[in-house]
Length: 367
Image (cartoon, rainbow, N blue to C red; front, side):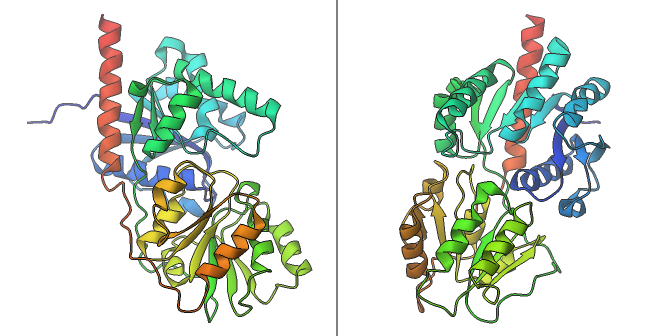
């Protein structure tokens, strides 16, 4: 006897590129989990070339738009109308404009939209005028999104405050944990002790601050390695050369599985202006590597819950960052005990939410 068709039997998700961002990495883990659990999943991609293309699950359908710009991604509405999924999943804040566009284009024919909050909703990098406009945009979300997913309780509370969303609209589901890759190709690592940064070479990450702080630490035998790729590479390379740090700082590019590198590092630093729930902090603490992080999200204090795990500093406080680095890079400094990552059953939790949202829509239409 065949099992009954689940309400959300067909899920459509989307991404601009597979260049290596944390949102896209988490999305690929989720779509694989949904497909492994028996759901049909269609992934719409603007440009499928990039380091994450090797992680595309074989059991997930892909539709290539051929254009990765936000305007080019507007074709998502037509694809959604063509294939008629039961639910549309928006993987992060950056993509919510595409969800809004799809809702506007399809109207009542648009499937229920579930949107994940992937970044901080209060941004230090915004000026007063832009911050006001951004908050108005956030408060429009409850009009086109059926449900919101926060990755931590603190982010859910922030969403209620900044989006004006009813708490009943919000679910808290952590990202699925990162699993190690067998036979992963590792970059050349420093022979001795080293400080590590992991993330895109993007303005948000503020690796320039970390390089400046690293130039001021007490231990001159420590190396710095920043794993990731992005548009800021030329500026960072010029900064490294200007400071005379070419022999101590390396930028090896994208690494498919940085977990072994994280485990080898003396400490990991994340110095972003803003983040969502920084997965790299959890990945680091899971292997017992201490962390130094800016207070870039309300979720940071949910991860670094005690001084034995790491240090939190204010973005832009150069003195505090140097002091924290000196503290954690001191020879013989005790490492924290590993902290397990949450989210083991994230795929199942999302499917329960998708089914609930689809049923709610059907009941509302039947009423």
